[in-house]
Length: 270
Image (cartoon, rainbow, N blue to C red; front, side, top):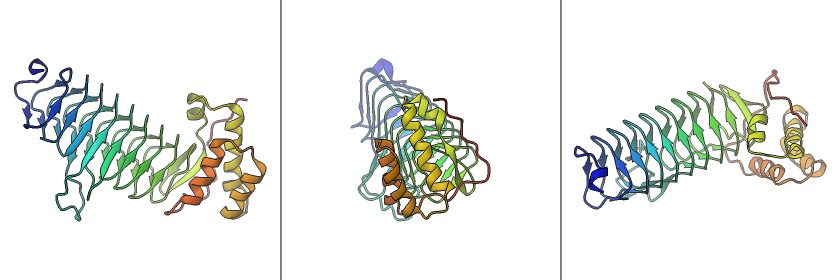
């Protein structure tokens, strides 16, 4: 264990570091941090709070994890961050611990690029990609396999549905639905994330049903309540269709509005 920790690293008493972890130069680790097997921590990384980092993660130079949240209501509560396995965190990423008695959660197999920010109390699913400078404000919920391109901004308490793709330089104050491709400021739904669905091995019939569901929601002149009822009545009840309907019905902030004039979704190959 001693040989895996650089002599300049500052490790507080009480920190739990697996004997196979690799701790680089000038790393600072707080007393309530746990680091799993095979995880590599690059130089000048700071990890604090009640933070748990899983196995085989790679955290690059200058990242900051588990420090106090940027929340005026935070009063020093013993909160933390929970990071899964095989997570890659590139240079200068910031992930803040929760407020009150909560935990900021990052799922397995995520990839956060330079300067991405995950604020307090976020819940991020597995396989999520945040490109450079993308920002999640407090309490944002991100579904599995979401991809945010560079410089995306997500307002606090928003939800991002599973397998969503958001184009660069986009921003939203409302929820973004699952399986969609979104773009703009304010963001609108531009189509279905067809390539992402194929990569996740979603069956052609299901992809076709998803596309039809969004046609009903965004390309007809009926209100949302009627559109959702029409989807349930007319479209095969695949789990993904039920997921879309439930996402809209359970939204507290509202889901982004009708798409723009340009139809940019990828053509389906059936």
